[in-house]
Amino acid sequence: MSKTECPKCGKSKQPWFDLCFSCNEKEKQKPTCEVCGVEVQEGWNLCTIHYNEKQEQKKKLKQIDYVKDKKQEEFKEKFEGKYYYNSQKVKSKSELLICYFLSANQVQFAYEPLMNIDGELRPDFVIEDSRGHFIILEHFGLEDKGYLERCNKKIEKYKKFCQENTAFSFVSTKEEDIYDLKDKLGKKLNETPLKRAMWR
Image 1 (tube, rainbow, N blue to C red):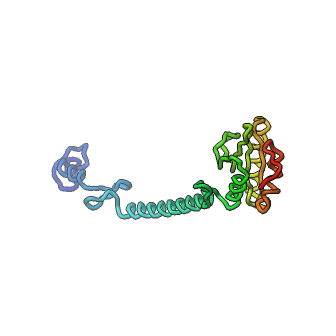
Image 2: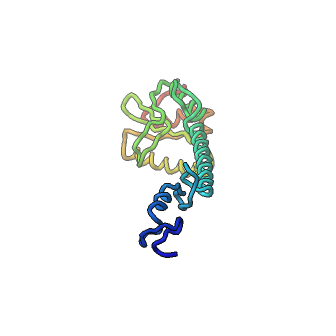
Image 3: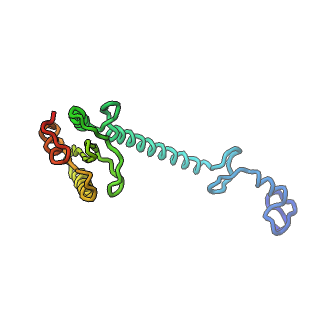
């Protein structure tokens, strides 16, 4: 075939073009796959192979999104809490009992306020006494190794913060303390400026 003859229709063409003008226009109008350039049906932008691949990717992304959504729900259920104290959600029954204990003793407190303590931390409770002193109260309710390591890091940060800021004190409770807050937490609070002769 000569360089001046169109391989599709046999009409004459310029030697520097692959096709004649009319065949070239027809080729431009044919839809092709965006990925591989193969001719596809009218109204399509992907060939069957790449269309199926895209559908598989969408399915996988939906599954990933479903897992993320499920994990997010589990996180909310676990960490946002499902117990209420005066319309405030608390994370656990133990924290709820601490709320009742503090309230019964007319102690003003904030639940999980955001504090800038060597980065952002949310202590479980911050108690304010009438003389402008603050007590950071953390409840550590689990016993597994990873959790205890994180607890120890938190404790170090709180103690360092309290040494640098004398208006603050730090106390913590464990799950075993919950069964006798009057005695266990009361004694710990008596080691701070928030002293009481008797705790309810």
